[in-house]
Length: 420
Ligand code: 3BY
Ligand code: FES
Ligand code: FE
Image (cartoon, rainbow, N blue to C red; front, side, top):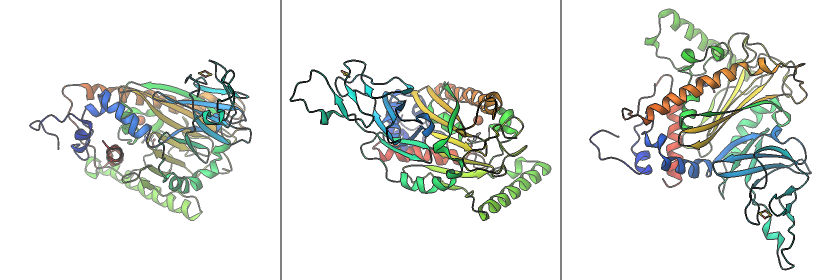
């Protein structure tokens, strides 16, 4: 336990070891450069992270470049429609090969001295290097890539955790009906939150803050957690909460009985690659996270042909995601510095859906553009607190914030597994 009389714990491993269970982290783990560097090395270069969707590089020659800290990764759709990931670094003198974001190429040509690589990463032309030069040992360096039903995961470690296959076994059947491998990115936003990435993740793992901050989202998002303190509710509100839980449980079991995986699977604590997933019921019209709860896109996702299957969520180390009959939402978190975090949000629709005809972009995006802005504000407030001399690690609610303790415990365990 950290207490005022204890000697000042300074190293990251001390701070991790001395974390008070069920409390936020000691401030330096949110605010310090050393902790940020350790996080980038251990979590973002040591674990599987989610970086995009198949629709980020849908056709042959499409490239999608994602930066993870100072490491840039090019995801390339090859001529056989396979996806590959490479370090976005030329094997000559290391120049950045491709710009950030999406582009389309015939070959991968370095802008510096025009070394040229196949979409497979093979170096095929390196002028003026002499006949003794061995091209075969200068191919682009591959990065581990695993696509699970159109969600793209990379691992920058030499040896990637093998349990991504367990994730695929759980998520695969849940996501298959949404046809994500063929989905289109209808819209994307990038928001830089002025806070540490772990505060962004913590903020996502609870909906304790929703009632007070998210009027647009609260119309349709009804928390999955059955967590409320019965003593904090009036008799009327308690009855409503119990009725909600009963309806939630009954709906879950009905979906399961029809063969739709819906119950929560939680593999957070004790796992290298963390995943929690669950199908949730929705409020209002109950169809989609839109201002009125009705679908925003009339061409449904994948093989979905009904509107009463709720919202399938997957929560992972650097992402959260919601999949509904008409659209999907993918939120990806990339730390930029101790106090700046990029949240990239992708709105996914059926690849054949046409903007203006099958969906209106403003209706599709309204709820989460508002919600993201509200969350960014909350994360900034939390970070300001962590920087303040008055900050002490605070308690998570054992009713509404158990998933935060799970997440932060996962984080501490993974840091320790990587030697911190
Ligand atoms: O990502 C989720 O599941 C939700 C949405 C709002 C807050 N968070 C718990
Ligand atoms: Fe790429 Fe020289 S650095 S060709
Ligand atoms: Fe929120």
